Image (cartoon, rainbow, N blue to C red):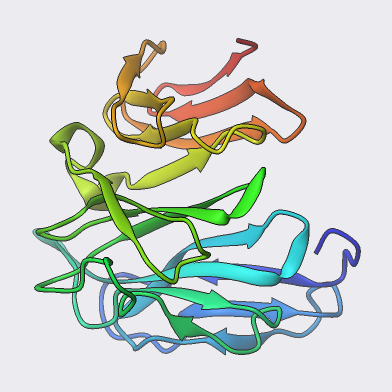
Length: 226
């Protein structure tokens, strides 16, 4: 919470090897002494992404993911995979999968979500689905359009599926995958950016300066100023 450090939300995946009720979104208002589970999909689906609308802790987006890990396989996708939104600080949630334009046929897997700090109505979601790819909403998730379904941005989806937006420009979008990919036209086209290592999993962008960032990949962390 930007003004109340004692209020914190966390996304909990839970263990991957069988049914587990300790999954979902948890919230504390006393600095972590006590926690309340505020979102739960099902015992096979944990929470994997959690985004606050910049400057507005009442509006949150989260995704839950049905995933099963065995010693010899990983199964990604199922009936508990959803994109959720809350407008009351996480106390109540509603699903965005059923909104117009969102891919909801067949099996849905992992979902990554990002909100444009310069325009909170602009929301991006990277969706694992047969009709998946990068989707964009211009109205806070009420309707969606497919921006890009190229394999480069959604290959091996369960291992990646992270999207980030520049803090000042709603059309500059980054996707983390085998390559580090950047778009300047709201995701319609992407170009690969060279980094010291492949397999990119996390990105921090300075909220005051979109040129300053830290990327996390299988080779560690690297810093960019441009």
